Length: 364
Image (cartoon, rainbow, N blue to C red; front, top):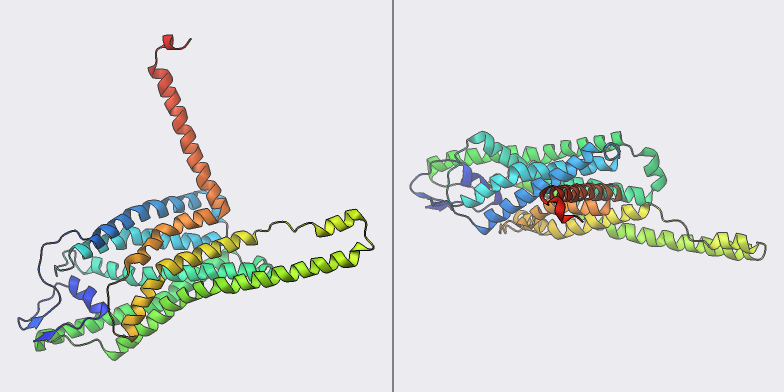
């Protein structure tokens, strides 16, 4: 007898493909009744909350012309759209997958399976790379503010997102297609020989390159960019303090008290602090939710340790709209305005209903 090799691609494909195996071949899947597991319930909660949170934030940005014309909000729309589609399509299918993990039947045909695999690979990696683009944008805005204001535009942001999705499809989509073709070939050999062979060396090499380029490097860039920006901000602040001190010393003897007072006044708070807050928020969220998944992928690629998939990264879908709303002031004010208007309308409706229900004798 021959057992199925435990690699991260075979587990997903074999759990869904309605294939017929020879009697002398054993697999990791056994027929059983679907049941609710912690993973299935977890994906269900993520799906419901993700659709509501990302959908509300998307609608708020789309309906506000000021938000639509902001170049940085192009990246925000790109990220929230990927989150919304994942919550609407990927995670409900993940609920079915987790409930039927030991039940090797897929009743919806090949097209829905293709959509699931596409979202699981391309759409998820697009979310990670969008975080990297937003981090690079914040670094550009903080380190080179003059260049950022001169060259960054809405068109530039749209082209950047288009290029990002293109190379994600080339790397991750190409790997997914090659893995599916290789798996069908291996299943054909399984029917003939009773043994499921290991993936080809080309597919394994593509898997390693894909996980490094499309997943690990963007996460690493987001994490490394934050301390670099912090050091540059400290260096720039010290240089600014030295220049102000030199101006104060050189002008103290020749200046009037009013002019000296004008020199020592602190500089006004600039919008770079908002950019720094956004970068800090994105860095912390990526480090907390994506690093465990990177470790799982790299251990599987280079050490052969295919452990349990780290589902913690799916929480990023819920956290993104909340953190971006809190970090971006115009978006935060719009959310507060909507909540205040809804609360005011509800209070007014309650007062009107109270006045309508109570008799006139109750009012002196």
